Length: 120
Image (cartoon, rainbow, N blue to C red; front, side):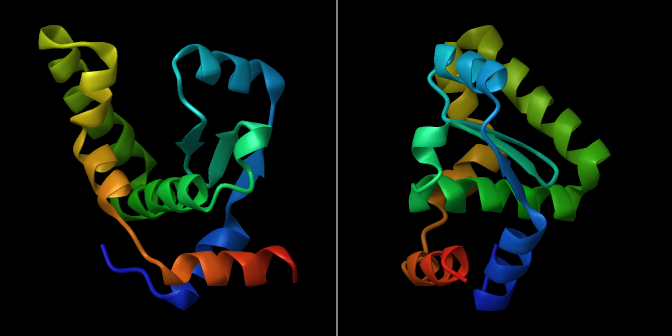
């Protein structure tokens, strides 16, 4: 996946970052800081300023655009449950192709774009 400055800004402007305590409480029980559903990201309030977490979740938002909601979730769950049968929850999560892409995506310019966007 290739994202440029305009992609980041488009994704940041369309994405809603929500810290909803009941959901983030559940996420924390699974050692997760955020979860993305389409353009909605439920995120632990302590991670709202984490550039790495925001970028990771924006990669998922772009994946939703690429695969559509009805394509993303079945593919994600298929890979997750296929892995969970033979390994741990965490290892199954880390073997999902969407997670591999999101964790592998690095872009040093994103921090500058995110900070500019956040203070506009």
